[in-house]
Length: 433
Figure 1 (cartoon, rainbow, N blue to C red):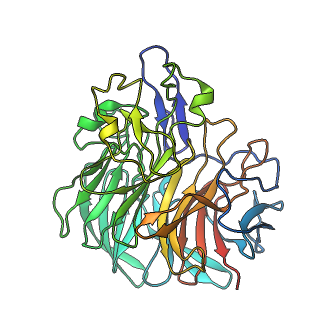
Figure 2 (cartoon, rainbow, N blue to C red; figure 1 turned 180 degrees about the horizontal axis):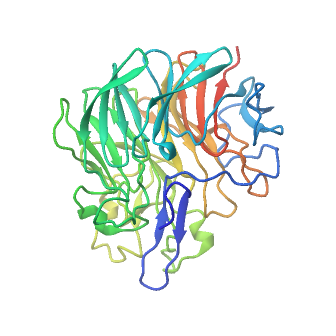
């Protein structure tokens, strides 16, 4: 198994009845970039769009910003490099107005204190095991590592008094997995009642044994308010890296679907079919929700996608009745690799005042490559509207990329802060004044 911190979405098609090694949310080194021009995204712009040059303060112009980079943003908005740090991933704003950012590859959680047009960086936590998801409930900070979830008291810029919320989670060091684990990075969210939710990704692409593992993999787990054993909350969630609570208190996940899917009409793995199937999921979770992996796949879309049988794992429907499952609420193009998910509730101007922000990392196996972007889904009456592009332009016409967004969160100043683990940057997306 390749080093989990040096690849992004790994797929190896095996011949005959063998299964397929799938994608992962782990980080990839930057790909070579040969163009600075913004390209058109697979989703329509959220509103009128401008192509602007990324603003780079003095001292932050190392590659890929040693040459001008252009992006597509809403008309009148700007995008600037706010900070540089290697491989930033998920983020959250602390009660004291600082931005916390996880760096799984370094085992750290960093703290960025706004200063002028940029930020001062310091280490909040180190020596952790691939920390990824971050969430606050009041002054309690939750951190998801590859093998556990902990809670800390956060005061005066320090995280103290660590307590174990959940332990013994599967990762590459788990004896039964013997290093063969593709989705070590985990995310965490806290419900309005204080329940703690965290993701456990699948071992690989279509490893059906994950469903009966202990603890089950490909699952969103729930720890009850006040603590206690973690129990499955939603199942069949192949890699729910995006995990966030919506304005109405419901839990949503941005879920990475499987790779190298066979065309149900022929039973063969055809690259032209694989490029567009299955669509990635953006789903509202409820107790006992089943997203179907690896026996069912979403079809159609972009919204209210029915689930259909996977002909490689559930050809006769005996493993799971896909037609009986509720449709998937929203989706992304296949292999988009949605990662960080957050909701914005009034911090941004219309038409972005209410909605979901998603960092879309981009594909490894679609032709042409699915582009990285920051997506916006408008929130209306307890539901999410169709995907729109908020920021694009990280990929050139030849498929090379100079950046790959991971997560986007609104800050206390009404701007959007975006982590990019390929450009080693945190951007500030500022609405028009």
